[in-house]
Amino acid sequence: MEFLSDNWGLIQSAFLTTLSLAVASGICALVLGTVLAAMRVSPIPALRGLATSYVEIFRNTPLTVVFFFLVFGLVYVDLQFPSRFVAAVAALSSYTAAFVCEALRSGINAVPAGQAEAARALGLDFRQSLTTIVLPQAFRTVVPPLGNVWIALAKNTSIAAGFAVSDLTALLQRLANANADQLLLIFAVVVLGYLVITLPSAWGISILERRLRIVR
Amino acid sequence: MTSRTNGEPLVRLAGVNKWFGELHVLQDIDLSIDRGEVVVVIGPSGSGKSTLCRTINRLEAIDKGEITIDGQRLPEEGKELARLRSDVGMVFQSFNLFAHKTILENVMLGPIKVRKQSKGDAEKRARVLLDRVGVGAQADKYPAQLSGGQQQRVAIARALAMEPKVMLFDEPTSALDPEMINEVLDVMTSLARDGMTMIVVTHEMGFARRAANRVVFMDSGRIVESAEPETFFTNPTSDRAKDFLSKILNH
View 1 (cartoon, rainbow over the protein chains, first blue to last red):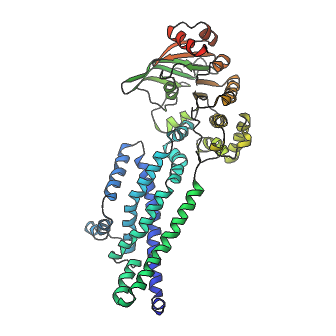
View 2 (tube, rainbow over the protein chains, first blue to last red):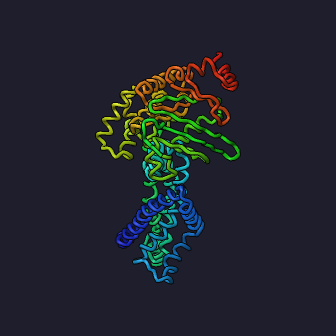
View 3 (cartoon, rainbow over the protein chains, first blue to last red):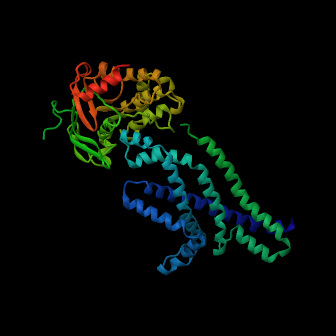
């Protein structure tokens, strides 16, 4: 226990780094993914094509490669993120947005066509019918798949450890290297750190699912 | 072109043609509907009557011809089309009430989002309309908690809230249990009496007799016959209409 209290400051900051990586990337991915999904169902072919290409590129590229590109590749075009943390958020959210988009799109397709037709018949334009009628219903049906995306994102944050972000996985490496005799304890602490983020999310998701269910 | 004169029909279809792939669903449709007129469109299934109804607010685009509403040509897409649609009420076979909104919100949505009315005004008017169609007590429920007949009456109130120039009814009673058909037809009949311009695709011959000024009979994408209800039902001129009527009226 002395080991834990000695390193408590490190543990705490690593946990907060992982949590903020996940939350910041989650929010960005949700926004970007929603925009992409709207583009994929829009009546304008150019927007549809753009969003489809984005999704196919990011969904089929390993996350580590996305990290590499954003951390080291952008330097070649004279761009650099203000910090490794921001670069990690950019990599995680641009990658996750592709999955958010696909989850949402399946939700949009599950909304009966008559809902959008009724909205259009009332005189709502494309944007209004999407934001007030279709998307709110689509979000409700995709709570479980979005929950999966969120949990995957929370765990994917660990890749940031390889790019000099001091998250829980970086803590694992650092403490384990210095304290081989405490290996099990260190593992337990790190795993617990991830569980504290993902398990309540899973509960939250199932509560949300029950709350938001729409009866048809 | 003289538009918006009193003699001008409110809805005019001229030389309208539409194909679904190879299928020629609407063939050279010419139809004019005057202000306050109630036109009932009947015909066998697959005759194109629902498609005809849906072209009038461009839920279905036409391939050839012209449709004007109140002297204005139906715009292709975008804001202009949205504005024109807001003047054309539509009632669907499957009601299509917004599943995630309450009954009251369903009726308030159009006036707030499209007409930019205040919430208070929209609610006041929505409650009046819901009372008028007899579902005022259900205002805070969700669509799935209502019977089909109630849902369809809400759908009518939702369309009326936009104060449309013309109302389209696309088989409004076809998805209803028999005992609920009349409650919807009663609302429609009273609308007709109040002078609403209506285009009604239906199989309800009783309603056609009671409320229509004109019956339009369609078959295979064409308008075969167009006459006053009494004339049409007692003395149809085309063989196709005679055949159709003998099948539906004889039992």
